[in-house]
Image (cartoon, rainbow, N blue to C red; front, side, top):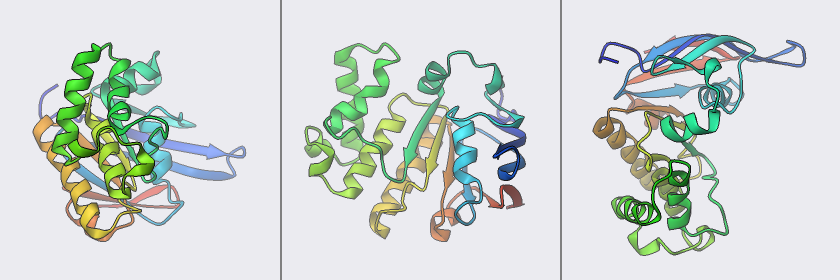
Length: 225
């Protein structure tokens, strides 16, 4: 795949519920390239989270198609393995496993990749150090701040060096300082790894730092800048 080939392509994606009465997503088409940070904006219920769920293989479209790295997502047989290899997730509420330390949470995605235990430990500690969390590695999520939990969630998303990071309101519960830290970490990853960050946000300041912005309303793409 060369620099001119889209890393991600969505074509006419739709997701209907209640026999078509509810159109969570309705004919969304766009493409984007490696190394980009793309902001998805729009009001609650406009389809941002539904779009990310389909692109992350957590849901399937009613119609339309999407591809990552030229691979049609509808043809992916082992969806869990594909996600582990290619996609990192960051959510608003971090979804850390409460009974596992930050270090254990960050190492978890590498297990599916067959990374040896010692290597998992080393890579996770290194990434937590980059996040400013080396002193919190053995703490449970409940014993660190919200900003620290979210930075650990970013580390977990990045640990397998995925092609795509899907971030669903990752700064929604953070103050402005921690919001900026999280966004900077995601952008640095996109640049350094030549990856794509797809960032759903209500925050206009966060959206403003993205390379491009897609605005959604009522399940449709209404503007792209």
